[in-house]
Image (cartoon, rainbow, N blue to C red; front, side):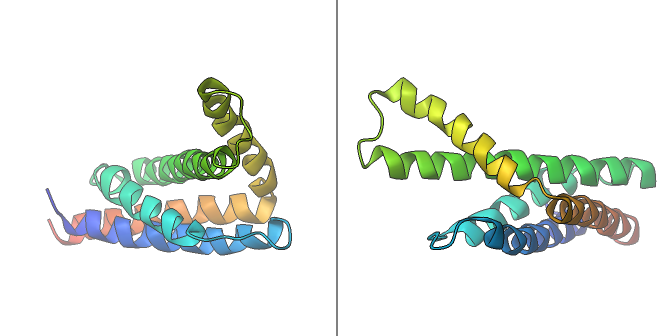
Length: 146
């Protein structure tokens, strides 16, 4: 059911995902073709904001903080999965894998490599603060527009 809290959470989480994407881009090697990196992450942020953060509103401030941190963690997990799958698909089209199971397991290896690239303090801090602020905004919207 569409609510103001879900809309606010979707917009705010998409903004957090976009900002964090731009923080991650300088950490990757020079000459990296980013393609759909930012729009994909913004779409994931909007989806997580709508489906998770916006759904869990109206339970108080402590739950909102926990909800925001969970939303940020979900953004990282799904972002790593989709970016790892995209990179695996790109490598699979160049015949880098011997079979489908090797390609599928490479998604998780690539995602783990991407996690170690992005696991720097300023990116993780931006994710945590952005997630908490998103949840607090959604909580405020839920209380204001019931």
